[in-house]
Image 1 (cartoon, rainbow, N blue to C red):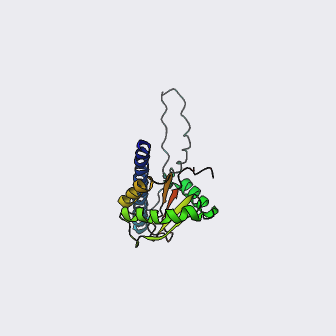
Image 2 (image 1 turned 135 degrees about the vertical axis):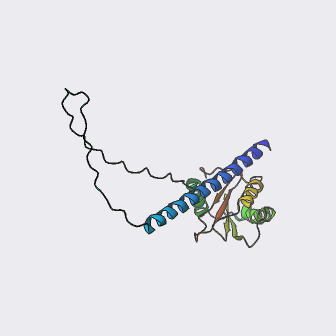
Image 3 (image 1 turned 90 degrees about the vertical axis):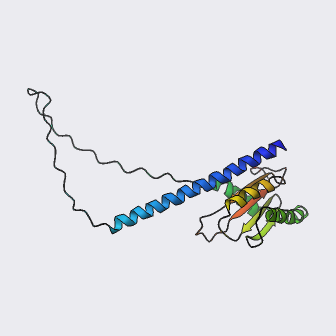
Length: 192
């Protein structure tokens, strides 16, 4: 029980971290768009060539130094890109798509998973499908994102009956729905 509690805490922290990074990305994208819009609306500045600055000799008897060509300004650094947890999302999606349905296990798990969804404050209006295969179940949501508190609730409830879970969300403007994957107990994600 202790192991599952710790795993639930780790999963909850992961969800919170994902939302935090997503909000940073959204803030960064918004500030870049705002500064670009301000730059586009500003009048162009007249470009003046920089006059060379003469170099005075350090000592009156020393010969004058030749001006050194100024190095070109280095390119601005690329902004940090926050990568989604796409590797785990891809592993779960690939695993789910490649499996056949184990009707004996899936027929029990789908209603149980639907019950856990409603217990985590999600409604039928939030979910479009619940489908289980041989080792992975997938919940397809109607929207590309899930409320943070609902996601944490969902993680903590589902981890009591499954070995591993993953929430795959998208930008709010995406047409792709969010998916929640749950891995059958006794299995690992990397080994079938």
